[in-house]
Image 1 (tube, rainbow, N blue to C red):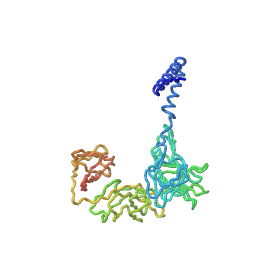
Image 2 (image 1 turned 45 degrees about the vertical axis):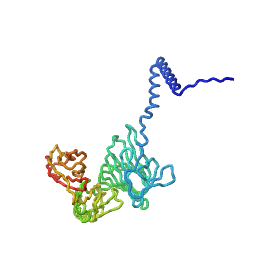
Image 3 (image 1 turned 120 degrees about the horizontal axis):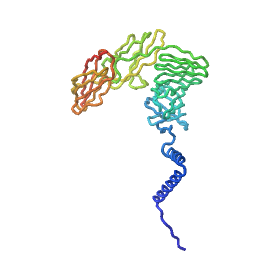
Image 4 (image 1 turned 120 degrees about the vertical axis):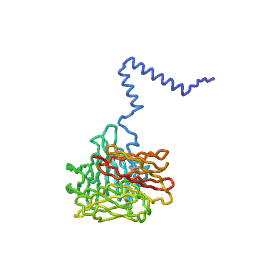
Length: 411
């Protein structure tokens, strides 16, 4: 018996398959052009586009953007708690807990941020975002405190929510608030620092605005009251480098704007962005400034709270960052300001420094310095009136320099 065969390559099979599909589509087109169009659209959607509202999984997952101290996660399909890291993605049903010295900041797909304070236990409840559809993010807080901040939503129906027991607090666009849950004392509250929010319990709905608080004890009614506004920080400015001869002995001047009805303030300085460890604290400050010394060189964060005569405390102010730098004694640095120009409310600073040096103007880094050391920097919009622009720099040898120029922004 003799056996004969013919070898066919995969390439040949693929060519015949393509020809067969082309013949089928041509026949369908000749018989019914409309049917051809429908078939082509369906095939194109299946192979290429898929669900038009679907987004890549990576864009619909929440992630950690700040971690401090001990923070643990238990995935929805796991029974084991693991330490959180920046590679950990969060899905609906995942649980997060922070220790007494831990804190975490989570960013959701719609850019809503949730800051999980120390000693807090939460569960991710919602994280949805579709093209041209309202976004939705939400967590359930079992105990502790969560601060959240919403972006400028593209859809008015987008929401960010925090659930606790039988209540839900929802933030509107461009808003920030602190939500606390204390099951041991059966107390819950939300304090809005900017924008607005809504608290719902069953059929009861309460709208609260900036510098207002809604308290809702377990089984009790929702009550709304006004709160102290947080102070507005002035100095050191955000991201400002402070060049001093000896950081440890230098008296750093902190200043903020007065809050109506406030009788004292508390200033906190920390080496961590979420203040899990405090480097210095100045409680009971009367007035709107204080000098603090004893800090080593490095990066620091600071904020202020206000207290009224009833011992009621405001929410924490915005947090500013500054850098304490020891002045270079043995190395000098070239830094010259050759001119300034006013463009509406923006100031242009023109100068010259050393190639490769790093410059900061009013807390903002200068992104481009030419090969010959010349630079032009445009400030952020300034209010009308007189301003002192501070330019500081550091070269590769460790030398530092500082220049100040005074400008006047016309009304």
